[in-house]
Amino acid sequence: MLVRDAMSTVVLTIGPAHTLRKAAALMSARRIGAAVVLDPDDSGIGILTERDILNSVGLGQSPDTEPAHAHTTNDVVFATPTWTLEEAAQAMAHGGFRHLIVLDRGEPVGIVSVRDIIRCWAPLRQPAPA
Image 1: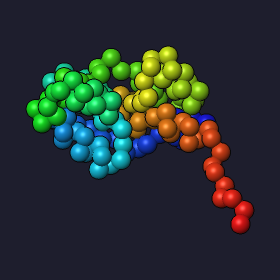
Image 2 (image 1 turned 90 degrees about the vertical axis):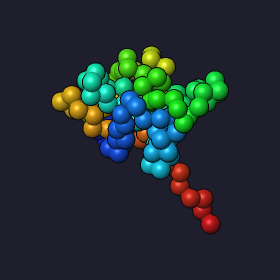
Image 3 (image 1 turned 135 degrees about the vertical axis):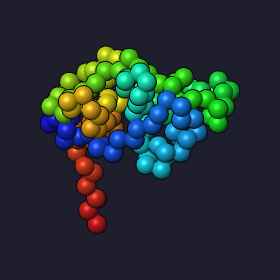
């Protein structure tokens, strides 16, 4: 199975100046755990995850004033839609992260998460016989 078969094509993109609260609200509304951070001045693609927001709040920082760019991971490993799920899982395990931005021709087209991979690999639970 390939990354394109598992990835979410709902890609939330935010700017580096978004506050963590705004990012969290957008992520929550879409029920996703990561946002792609596009910095037009830097031409870079980064990722902000729910864990990044949690760590900031845990440090006592205000989500109302903390900008996304201060918590964005910019040293990102990108997947392509044609990677196998094994390649994606290996990259996640090696890098210690739970999300990969999926790029096609340099543009973000999806995000694949550990949950997406597990959903594809684990058999669906069948209802118990009545």
